[in-house]
Length: 116
Ligand SMILES: [Zn+2]
Image (cartoon, rainbow, N blue to C red; front, top):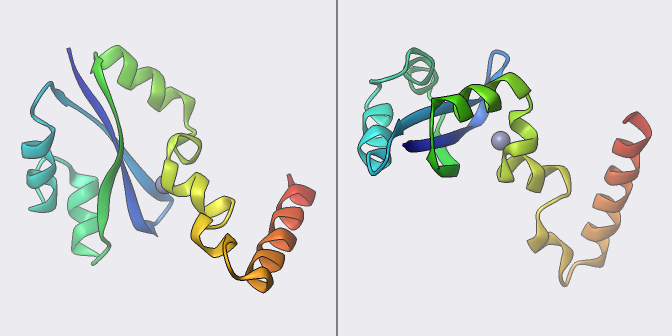
């Protein structure tokens, strides 16, 4: 058994904005340090070389590689990503104490729905 982890890039790298990986249980911290150092993944090494930051935003523990494959096959990382979901609905912190900001995000939401 192991852990599947989702990494979100601060900025899109070509067509990629996420990296989905797998490691043995208990090894995520070490794996993440290796990624930060540019090892363990060609994609993340390229992302780091481009000056784009990234971080682990979600993990699924006690799963195996079949689970990783199933998630990858879904091809909907943004929907799995709490960071992207948060961005689509506007940051929660902007909703309090700033009515004008809330109105703006309301318009943005309606525009998004129209395109959906
Ligand atoms: Zn994301």
